[in-house]
Image 1 (cartoon, rainbow, N blue to C red):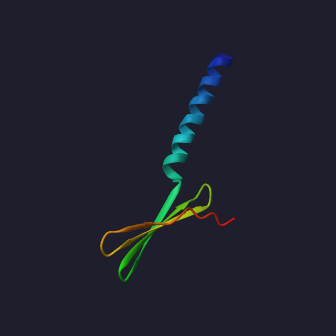
Image 2: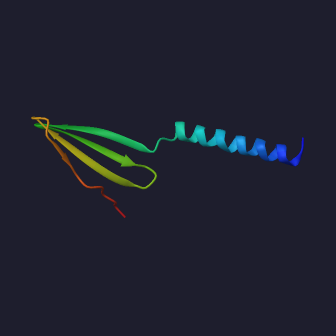
Image 3: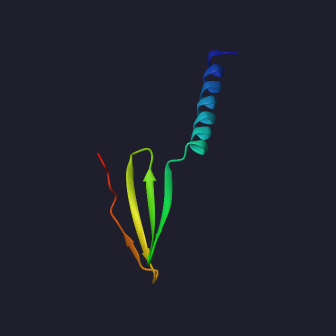
Length: 71
């Protein structure tokens, strides 16, 4: 095996590790909170720590809140 072959195997290992990390370490987490007259959906971005909230009322109207950065 030459030095060039070692670099190709290393590159392949990094790509496979990246795919594995992307599949098993998801970026977004969401939760639903049901309240009388509305449903809230909270989306949390694990990589940046930001949160966004959407509220659906009884009539299906959407109220999308801005992105919140706690720090």
